Amino acid sequence: MISLNLGRAFRVWQRNFTVYTKLYLSSLALNFVEPVLYLAALGLGLGAFVKAINGVPYIKFIAPGIIASSSMFAAIYECTYGTYVRMTFQKTFDAILATPINVEDLIAGELMWGATKSVIYGTIIMIVISAFGLVDSSFVLFIIPLLFVTGLIFAEISVIFVAIVPGIDSFNYFYTLLMTPMFLFSGIFFPLDNLPPAVLKVAFFTPLYHLVNICRSLAAGSPRVIWDIVWVLVVAVLLAPYPFRLMRRRIVK
Amino acid sequence: MPDVIMGHMNVVTAKKLTKDYDSFRAVDGIDFELVRGEFFGFLGPNGAGKTTVMRVIYCFMPPSSGQVSVFDMDVAKDASRIKARIGVMPQEDNLDPDLNVIENLIVYARYFDIPKREALRSASELLSFVELEGKARTKVGNLSGGMKRRLILARALINNPELLILDEPTTGLDPHSRHAVWDKLKQLKEKNTTLVLTTHYMEEAERLCDRVAIMDAGKIVTVDTPSTLMRMHGGNLEDVYLKLTGKDLIMS
Image 1 (cartoon, rainbow over the protein chains, first blue to last red):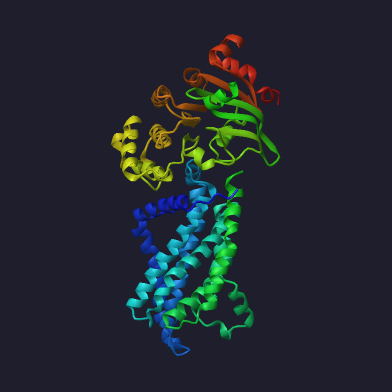
Image 2 (cartoon, each protein chain N blue to C red; image 1 turned 180 degrees about the vertical axis):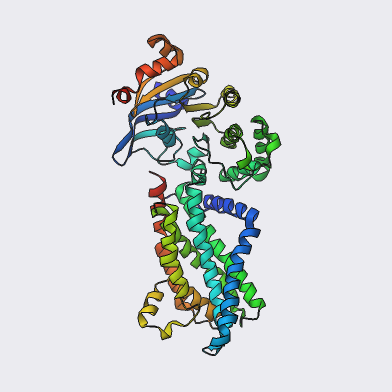
């Protein structure tokens, strides 16, 4: 029984947005500090030794990748920890499901909210690195809508995990075994060409790798990102049924 | 002829309602009808299936088999339209801890697509109805247990429901708070709201309910007015309850 209604899904999105606007200063600051620390520590610290990669100064090489990772962390934390707390401890889902909102609307709202957070946090980093002069092209603006698509992918994967984990501690497996390796081996900090070819092959199957390509190319003014865009669009659509199906099974016994 | 009239009079009609959780049968083929304007109670030991029946009525989950219609619509097909006309006071506190008292009502109103201006007006009316006027900006976490229950009642009324579902509305409340909730429920009954209640307090059922169904192990043992049951079986409602339920509990 699929009964998704986008108007009702928007109400769920709006609930999360309302809560976010009450707390945004603290959460914005926290989510913003960490990527800037990475940029400063690695860009300046490591950059003093590495100098340039493919002719690009090191800090400029990693900066667009930080847009990608920051947007990934935002969606993943929102739709693992945040969604789980709303579902279990706060019982927010139970309250919402006693209204005209159905499970499908609820999950769609959560996914759209996760994607929205991806856009917010990615865009903030984009503004910051642009202010530091680390972006060459206004093509960088095309990243914003794409952040919504990749944010959707990260949200979908996260909600799938929420639907199957036995408890909140299980997210550590997700963070350690999936998110951190993705963060380190998606080409943010070094090109993957010099590593064993297997690494690149694995990276190809991760959304972050394609998002990093998109961000780096567009920031440099290169429009050669069509296949990465196709990849993220296709994967966002292919994954879509699973969070709905699995969450319905988890919530409605 | 009676079918047509009954169909119109009934707010809820359940036929052979069965609900299984995996291999456990929580509700076992029960029939019941809730008539418009009545206050109906489901009584029974823990695990008798009362909450499950409530959840099926408010379309949280579909029946495994059998038919349940609310406002002449099928719970398995018209969930959103049914839920738009129902208010639910759940057993546990599921207020939104990230929002203050008035925001809890306003955000809830949005789920029903109630326009903001109207939501603000009903929210302040409801806060005075449940005597929380002064608490509009208070964080939910700072409310007492009784205040939380009253806020949950106010929230359940935000869409001006025709049917109000109360799953153990006064569990854990002190006598003053309990009486405060009872007063509100009686006022709603006078406004011709249909109410359905589960409770472990026989005194509560005796005071409030026009009719009660006593459930045990997923089945309805008997349905009648509290006074008829007491006359038939002797003693007060609690004596009737003890006589009719929990045989397997005592045996084991």
